[in-house]
Amino acid sequence: MRITTRGKVAVSAMTDLALHQRMKPVSLTSISQRQGTSLSYLEQLFSALRRAGLVESTRGPGGGYTLARRPEQIAVAEIILAVENMEVDDYQPLTPPQVAQLKAMTGELWVSFNARVLEYLQSVSLKELVTQAQAQGVEPAPERQSASPRKAVGITKPAPRPLMSRLQIPNSVFALGAMPLAPRR
Image (cartoon, rainbow, N blue to C red):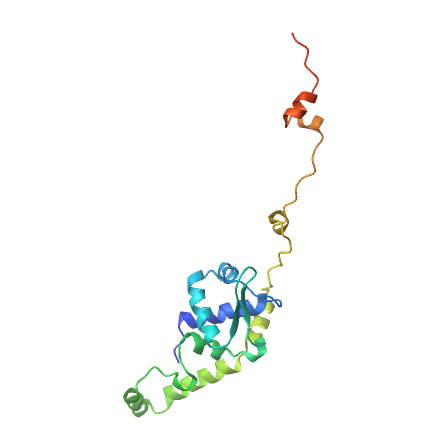
């Protein structure tokens, strides 16, 4: 079984999705920023994951992706097979004559190896990866709750200061008109 970068990135992105979804869709943009992966690459991967029935998409504002099943019901092997465009019975990239020659030279070694790798990946659930990530200190990013951009990033507007504490510099024509005139020299 050949696991490429495509499969590794998909597993990482699905772990991120499972970690950050809280009964609402997670945008690919946020996954892209956290994982350091290009948005267009994630779009390709999530398209394959959606076709495989592993994720569901929601369009529009507040849209994104959610897991189609609970994390404990999704095996790592399913994620890899979905993005690598392989079937469970078809995980060996060799043609039948090559398989026959390989079996003749090495017995069942490589066929058995591939089967065991696939078996192991089928035994590891997405929930286990989320638990491992949390044990390593990876926590979901805090939710942004506000409608105002100032509140979303924790910026508060300072309380207005009295006019006198601003060195008597007027901030409008009305304040200028209210200022006492300075004596002429």
